Length: 335
Image 1: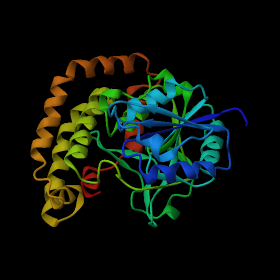
Image 2: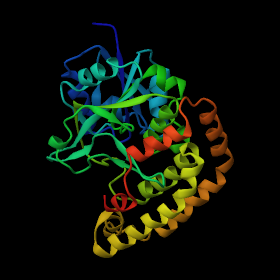
Image 3: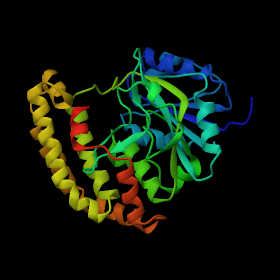
């Protein structure tokens, strides 16, 4: 067995047959210098029952659901590989996935993150080819629902989707890993923005293909997802955006809410899906998210100061990154 270059961290809650499919896809990788850590957040030891024993498979079994970021941090702390890959438990990796990610990151010393070409399962459409950011802190998948053929060029992107990505351990540990206060959703965007402040780049590898069951665990449009997406975009906004951009965020948020209402009346977009699934009104969720922001304000400001203290790029350079990889409030509401 060659030396381990990559630790593949797979958090799981359902630990069902899709997890087994995910692990089987890793057995077929063209590179085998990796180990797999399954972080079981079910509290019932379900992953071990589903998967059984395997030579390069290790389990971390938590008594409660600690969330995505905490699970990945656990895997990192209990491994030593120079690279850390994250993979959703409902994703299936093509055979060259790890090889493509590694060759891309290793080709440039300032690349600390690599985004996969994540395709929707049983579809000819993309889930993501990296991530985009809105001026109010909302993040969305680059190329979502587009054809994979439109995203075949290797290029720099803002940051990767945590559903299938590769991180340098050097970078991951230097910026403190995932912020566990996020619990679920947007933690990959927060980590990517912090890495950008620290001077690291992200590259997109179009041949690192993964097939993903979108929102298999938490659902496509649920109160749980809506709350954490809204709360966490506020958290990452306060932590990461330069002051000038913070001042612009509230009117952009209002514009996004207006587009959600318009699309709701048209029966389109995330707000319409939320209503169609019988989840009621989003107004209460927005209020709760902003109340959580106020309650956590002091902690967020402390984290903001720490990010600036270790920054290796200027606020002007960070603003340029946000502009170069932007998505409009209208586009966010329509996805």
